[in-house]
Length: 115
Image (cartoon, rainbow, N blue to C red; front, side):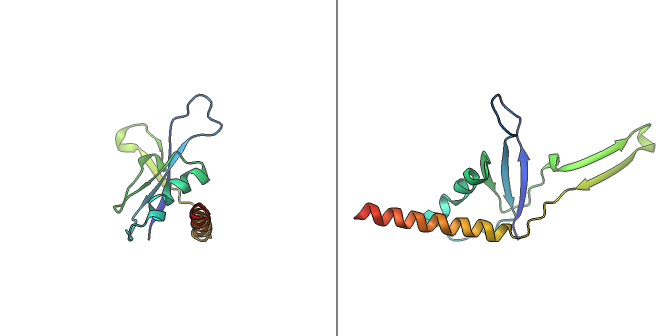
């Protein structure tokens, strides 16, 4: 099953909120169709991401791992690693509904263009 991660980007002047990239990994490829080719970019625009990166492999973003340590000496270091994973209940359904809506709007636009 595909995973979603956020890769925060450095803020630029005039950014209202921190820019980010949506990273989808462990993606199982499906047949490429014209509507699927633009789906990820449309999703990026809808959620405010700068881009969507899709990988079949597992991609670990080190910035998403939080390391807390109090180091007195290397041998006495206490390290706690936390991995924060978002609660995505209902996210797939929402994304798929938006994709279906975008596909329907595209089909309607193509039909109108043919008239």
